[in-house]
Length: 433
Image (cartoon, rainbow, N blue to C red; front, side, top):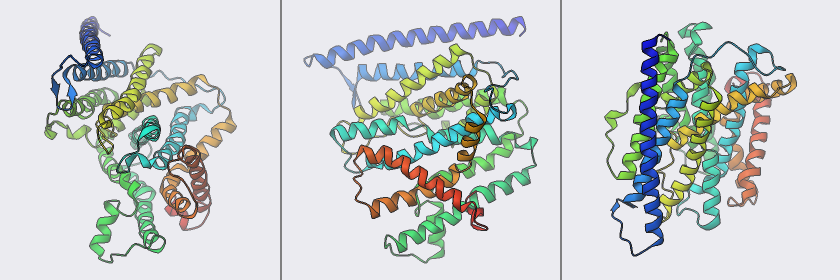
């Protein structure tokens, strides 16, 4: 690094530290006043929207602290040195092992979210059930962003393996064709098993498929297809790490942070500020690629983990607070593109990458993880059919913690087994890639 660049980085670090110190002081002072006013009911505190002024002040300060601290820890790192980890694993597979492990755990997490679906019921759960449903959803809110991040880590360098036409053919055969096939199966399932009336209008069928009306959880495919269409453009960027640093920063500020702050303050956010090249979960794709290509020091990882933990607490506690006087779930601190979800996903991704650099993974364990990872897409396609079948055929209490946790593991295992069997059957295996 030349002297001028070194001086510039020192000035940036100093500015970031000053801003963080000021924000921490504001958060501490306003938090103490908020705590005092909450205990002394005689003190009248002005409100902005639904929340007291001082509570909003420390909340907004905390949000900016988390965004700035996490971005600084994540983005001011050097390129990854060429080294491998995990002594028992073939070095060529080391970098992909943590991605495969993430796929497996994230797939299980998605099933947990769906067995915990009672949180979205209207009216929302109350009492201990409300606390437990919110806790479970907050703990497992990161899997969907992780899938987008893994897409970036594995596909943005596709040009090193094949051309763009081959890339598109693979995406069509591996995702688009199965999506259409399983959506039609979902339509048949709804008619034959649940007794829903069939609408034979072809245009309505097409609309229902692409709006995920037959299988609601297939909403994931639309942003995924949009990402696939954008990947050839981003894959052509030569210095991806440097370019993506800027785009991640813009995405976190204008997609994750400012909309949340405006929501809390009761201000309408102008959607034109959502920068197109980072919108639609694209910043997650770039973040996944970036994390897979850089080396993050232990101190910076600690900051990322702390921000992720606070992100979990912010989503859990914030949702309890926002929904306290409502009969439905208030999603102010939820949504996958919101700051709490982003902080969680980044922390989990970094944790998995470095955990397997420290833990010796045997060849046998690696083989199991790689095999399960190959079944996760089929598990995702199948699991709602298994879940609905179990609810229909067995006396299941959807409020039970046993169902919401252990039931999810059973559904995941059964779905993975079905996917494994279907992948062995000629022709049918083309619909379970």
